[in-house]
Image (tube, rainbow, N blue to C red; front, side, top):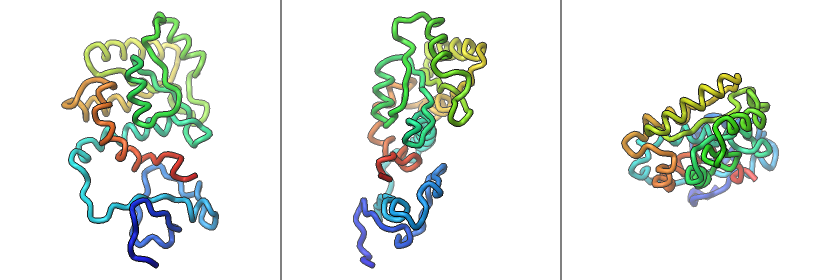
Length: 209
């Protein structure tokens, strides 16, 4: 076998000359050995002899949390659970799209009353996610003063309707991004650093097809 491997090489997994650590949540059963998909289409990105770029370590907690959220948000056809993310405004939506989120994203600031918004979310997404039985929505308000107040109001009203809510990503961002900003929109500054890290935990579906 050729000992020289280029970045982006695709090899049968048995021939890879290194120990492989698969991302958390990666299901090898979905890519069984003995099939073309299992043996020939597992895309591995190699960067031998390179150090991680500066800032990777400090952003990793945020990247892991965003990767988990992105995976749940993904369309079920592509292996996700279609769990919607609730953000404040359009710029927050654009930031998440830039981070590879391609599932449903709902805006709080759309000219509706809060009562109408809550009723819409309840009618559209129910109390629990139908695919994994987990939270029906993910709340991702900003973690500044305004965002905290809005988050608490929405959380209380949704739970009064027995809606299961996931705000774990926001809690991680509050801690790990506190020195870098206090808004979802502010993550856009770090997109180029975050995306490769997120992809190591939650590889985009296109890598396997």
